[in-house]
Image (cartoon, rainbow, N blue to C red):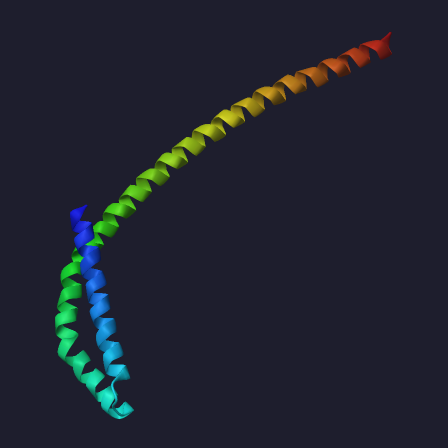
Length: 118
């Protein structure tokens, strides 16, 4: 649980830092061309560091996604099995009811035929 809070805190810090830097550069009293040049330079300087950070954490994220996907598959399979059982029960009840009604209807027709024969 602590690890998750640390990851969330780090992500929030990085997001805040990037947002602060971007806003600071954008609202600085400089020409657009100068601002774009500064942003480009900053991006080039930080690209490798950020790329390494993302790649370093990508494996951990992939692993977590795999774990959660497997858990979701297992739960889905459980729900599918439960649904199949319910369907089988419903089918069995429907067949029993159908056979019961069929017998009742057949008995009515036999009685009517017997009445007509008399």
